[in-house]
Length: 168
Image 1 (tube, one colour):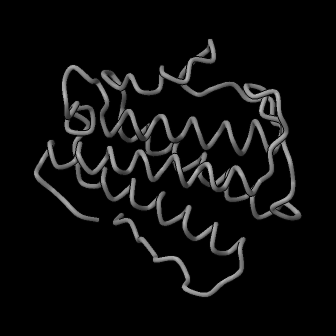
Image 2: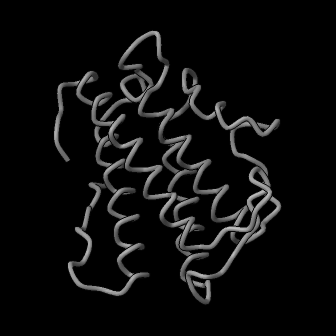
């Protein structure tokens, strides 16, 4: 199923704008991965780095889960790909399955969207244990946009190295 990427509104309230920009970035990552085989998704673009599109997808599923489910919703859920709490484990996609990673990522995005929609406001807070601080949903939304934007830049370069595709 082709990914639909909708541009953010030009005039909207803060929450709608944050939501739309985050979804735009999510769709950009999906577009960068679209149409590739598992082998291509696993391919590292710039050895000795092992960073791959599949590794980025797995990492971003982990990040969605952590910030929305673990921090904002205070759900007691483990990391997806690490029993020891190692966020770097998601990047190791050498044996990973693309369909599984996409399913997990989509599921975590849906959880994140639900948590954001159900939150009373962007001022809702959750506890970020790694920082020892409470953070607002507003900060989480902005942090997620930063995370996706940075990694989508990586995805641009990786995709071009895999099959020459540019843009999106």
